[in-house]
Amino acid sequence: GLPDTNKRIECDESAARERIISQIRQKHKKTVLRKARFWIPAAASVLLLLGIWFITQKPGMKGPDPIYYHTSQNEVLDIVLPDGSRVWLNANSNLELSNSFGKQQRKVKMKGEAYFEVARNEEKAFKVFTGGTTAKVMGTSFYLKSYDKEKVLLIVNSGKVKFCKHFWLQKGIVFSAGDKGEYSAATNEISREKNDIVNYLSWKTGILIFSDTPLSEVCTVLTNHFRVPVKSNLEDSAFSITGTFKNESLENVLSTISLTLDIEISETEIGIVMVK
Image (tube, rainbow, N blue to C red):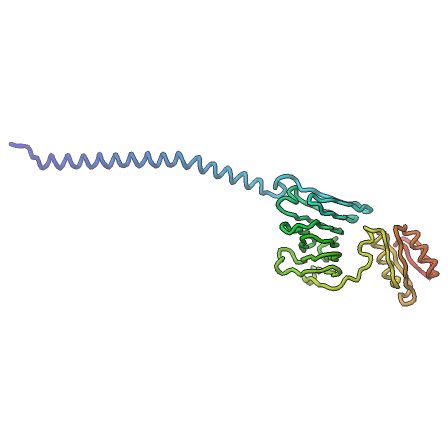
């Protein structure tokens, strides 16, 4: 009899569908393979870049090493920064700045006591980070003291200084020439008043000024200036000092005080003591 053409056609169609499906699968595999060949190296490159970024962002590895300045117990250092600003660093103090200082930014870290004369630059603010505070200026002169994290003292000599707690510049207080600011870690507050500390720069100028100054305050000034404990056992109401000392030794200052007030000064185990 005659062959069943309908059956043959069905078989041919079925085989054709299988071939088409097989070809599609092969093309899909090649496409996936080509994508994999592209993405695997690309992903590896991304991971390599991420690894390099992570390494360079680790503390202490951000480009060239920072620049450090340190003073000993009896040393005052006069530093000229790359932007032309000038810093006088008192004894037992530290100053740190990055190698990029003056290029993209003007930021320094300080611990201890320093006097700043900042070169004016309206585009790049000068910032000092110390004791949980930030002092921001464009160009002015000011004094900062922060030997610990308990208290920071700011005295503005000229211009204006924005003084704030770390990262709170928008809430900072603007201090003008003659102002004194104090930050207390205990209260987490900044106070502002007119400066009443006459000899805050005696370590830089070598000049001590007393104007009817009570003896207890004189002792405090001498202790800070000469870094030798000086105390008094006398009543403040009966003894005060008026005078100016320029680059005088502690021995000469004490001798003058002794003759002026007719008192005795003795050296003990706890330091120098003024007695009648």
